[in-house]
Length: 297
Image (tube, rainbow, N blue to C red; front, side, top):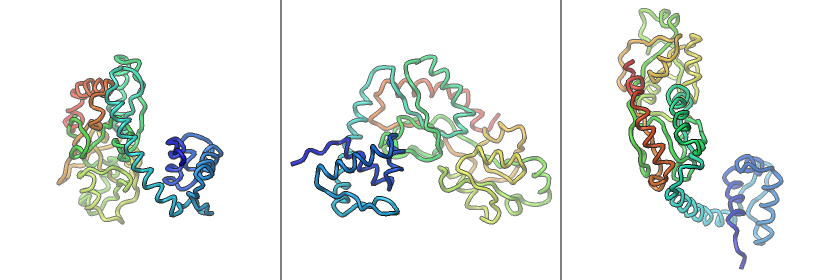
């Protein structure tokens, strides 16, 4: 009977998930030859062919698929154990992985992260700036600060503020629409399917004919730049639109005018000293930002 090494199994899982040795190497942060060597060693050690090596990539064999199903169950157990261990750590030092969006980081959070660092200099903050919803249950991040209408299931957290939305455009472009209803005649700058969409963003996207959308992006940052260049109107958080000195808010009726800002973590991590310190600090630090986030200033 062969003992399966978890480290080797992780290489097999990553190749299966990524579909190629090169992609797996990038994901694992190692070189191509290391992944290939570990994969070949695993197959040789267990006398098992895990992948069909095709010109289009690596495809699991039937035996490989059965192995993968078992490995995923093991991975889930290991991740749960890692979360529980991390959640019991009491030292105010080490890495805290935070995920948020680029606009929140630039316009709201970075100022507070700098002060948090002054208070806890031995906590290293590792940022993952993305509009993609990361899976906190799989330890993709320890803490997320992002818009949502409600707290996702299996997570715990606090609502930091409400976020108001509005329609913005360059004054010269808005003036060109005088006498016309913007929703019916304007060019629009929209969010792509890759971007996390709150109900406010979904509502305006669904009400705009696709032929009127001249640009889509997975972040509000490029929408601001496009609107500043007069390409069209953009549906933006007010704290984003108001931060631009080159955009003007369009006064128009909007059914869904906002969403909420949440700070969240997995329930297994709530007793981690690092997570608790960050929660305690950030929930107070954000309070003066609430008026701006709510579009009242």
